Image 1 (cartoon, helix red, strand yellow):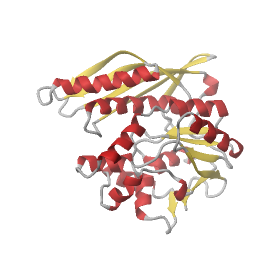
Image 2: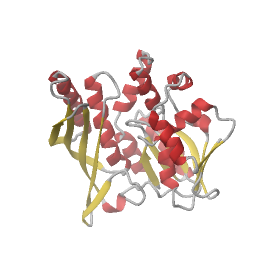
Image 3: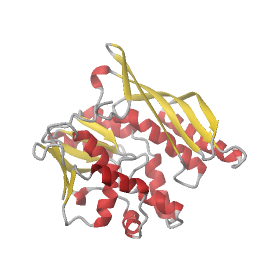
Length: 304
């Protein structure tokens, strides 16, 4: 709890621990089937970020009965079940309540060896930082609600948000890493801050190396900024120093709250290119080295 880990881990025996997490949220795309797939991929991500293997899930459902056709809920659940099947996760039950606003997600249980848990705060000076998915889903989702996102942008973020972080998790375990977290509601810089808060290291991030959806640039410039982005910036502004040369739209993207985002991985510099090659071989095509962990400016992130 003290280091804002992505999931809870409970040791059962010397060689077995369970990993537990729960996550659910309101729709961020119009298609209910896609929403179900996104919600499940997002819920499973916390287990993958810690190096665990998700096994079972419970549905968490809030539904506006009488205000929305039940066929919509059926499509949400169908999308979620299809994504669970892809992940090899078994649905064992769940709970639903009547609510004015549709919400969906999962409570997930996975397994891991107690000695192989990947924490979010183990980064060491000299480590390289790898991000496995592009940023900008929050900005584009806000544009969807405002009717300003085109089909190409929507399709791109749906493909990204429904992609499991399983392959990235498997690759980092094969290579061996020092720390990992998944990028979700606190944005890249918010989750990066969690990785170094209270530690003896800092970070330097090359803004030009950070992958993002090209459509997010124009939408950010047009003011399609989610409220969570402002909260993320305000909360972490004392830990982050951004060069004057970084354009405003890119600063916004770095704080943009993500849904079912990629993994941010810290690992020894000599392993970084090995992992990048493995990721690309597994189809994680947009993974990129975006910076490094440094001994200087402890507890701060410098963006150039």
